[in-house]
Amino acid sequence: MNAPATSAPARRISLALVLAASLALSLFLALRLPLLDPDEGRNAEVAREMAVSGDLVIPHLAGMPYLDKPPGFFWAAALSIRGFGPTPLAARLPSILAALALLALLGRAARRAGGERFGWIAPALLAAAPLFAALAAYVIFDMMLALCVTIVWLGLAREVEEAGGDEGASSSGPARLRRRLLMFAAIAAGILIKGPVMLGWALGGSLGAALLTRSRASLAWLVWWPGWILALGIPGAWFAAATARFPEYPHYAFLEESLERLTSNSFHRQQPWWFVPAVLVGGTLPWSLLTRWSRARLEASAPAVNVAAGAGVGFMLFAAVFFTLSHSKLVTYLLPALPPLAWCAAATWAGPATSGARRLALVISLSLAPAAVIVAAWAGWLRDSPLLAGGAPLARAVIAAGSPALCYQRCYSPGTDFLLGRASPLVSTRGEEITSNYVVRYRDALMARGEWRLLDRVPRDFAGILVRSARDTSGTSRLERVWAAEGQRFVAYRAGASMRPAAQP
Image (cartoon, rainbow, N blue to C red; front, side):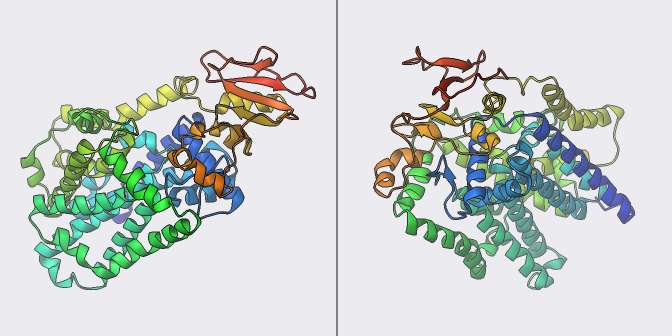
């Protein structure tokens, strides 16, 4: 498949239209939907507290150290929140920009490898995948991680291509140096965003690519020792700073958060054996079913397309093996496998024009899932769902009451604190409500160090809104309920004589 003689502006327009459509969908979702539970409210509030405190080493939630994740994603979100305030769009902006960068990177590599048509179909299929479209407007780590993994995969594909082709003579020049620096920088960024799993993607994906491409170039880049100084040095500096303040952190990070997550079901995220294929097929509907998957079609594509596809399948092979064996599985973990999957699918669609039925199938593949997401969001099915609405209804109630002080008792809504732009006290004995395994497991150490910020009882002089779980009615008979809604997780009570009546939101 040779690149057609299409003008440079025309080639740029095709990819620009894909990027514009993806950006429009992400902005629509970011502006239309509230922060969803459980992840978005928590991650947004961690970033807001970082933006307020200026502590870039240790993330905090409810004033407590939140060491369940490294700070990379929170750095980006905190910067956005400092610029635009505590709004859902500001919290979602890092994921939106990472998704655009990933699509642009994929489109540029696809155009170079397979021509103008392949250059827009590959990113268009990825943008149309419902899992990608949803996470492109979601306050979570995985879109930025997927960008880092894609940089490594496409860089590795170029290493293999150059080792086996006419460009091999120039593979030791400045171009290879820049590429490897970018690849190892992506590893460093991925570790700071999601932790050691980035090393798994880089090493496991490279091994899978070596098995499928039968090229030692898939592994040769890994022995470039200056890259590892970059890849491990920057995260290592942060890790050393965090350990200096919290000496138990290495034990938690490596043995409890990583090893225990992989080998036990203590995180309650076990899934059946068919979980990985179900996510890959369901997360890329409808094109996962409409694509004519064929090894012969793939091998008939341009050599550069075929090489990158082989390397990409190696990364998907790693994902299938690793996340099948792991005892901790979430749908979002498989997002980095979608770009190479879209690349392989695009190779079967980007050939010479075929029948009208196939063109119609491509249109359906690119439009059905985004249209369904837009309809669901516009109709309010997601926005108005009590299970997904997060802290927005409670925040509206507090604002309607004049924004008085708030105190949580045996429950916690970080999304509410984020939207109110302030941290509220939490009454809790163990801290399970803030969903931090680190806080729960190291309660005694945090108390001894003076880092424990949770209260054991509601202050006697508290005058404001007391928030409890809708299922917790003990001792509330003498409190006036000022806000509750059917299906919501929280109930708000007036506490203190100085409270004025709170309006219903």
